[in-house]
Image 1 (tube, chains in turn red, green):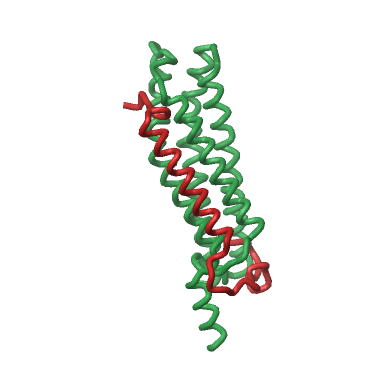
Image 2 (cartoon, each protein chain N blue to C red):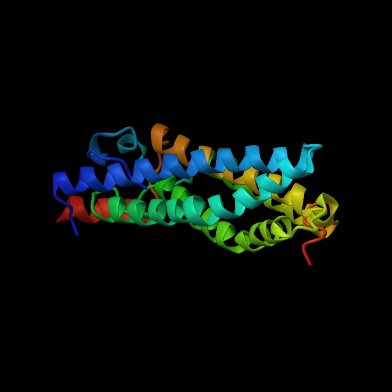
Length: 52
Length: 172
């Protein structure tokens, strides 16, 4: 998961903050949307029909 | 559990190699899935689905498990940790979900490969499974590219746990 090197000297150091970064929120929203679309595709039979 | 610099490099080498290998094999899998679903040649489609079963079990699953294991070792053996930074935590979640999804979806992959191995196989018998295999491959590629992007850019942001650990280190 991590890369080699010292994280203290990486770009992550200045970000000691209590608020969740905006990119994390955007990522979570995008992930939820994609998962919802996949679930809808499965439920409507668009994908996966014929598996059983 | 701090790794020595040499062990850290070795773990990183395994992690990068298996992660890139995972991405490459999934890209190949997508090519096979699209070819199998769109080819007008039944023998070519049969060959694609048969190979997909082999590639899934012999290449993609081992690469995924090795990538996950080496990533966890790399994180725990360095000051990065697993849950101190958002990008590492999210990358771990992506890898765990992608690996679990892969293991679950090896069932339809094996099912189509078994159908294709039958001499009486008809491409239409695979039905919606053909589009499912394409969707799986595209989602896997999206997840893996996202994970690699996180590794390269390391977007800033410590988790609450990471902030607490940092405060503890500064006070001790």
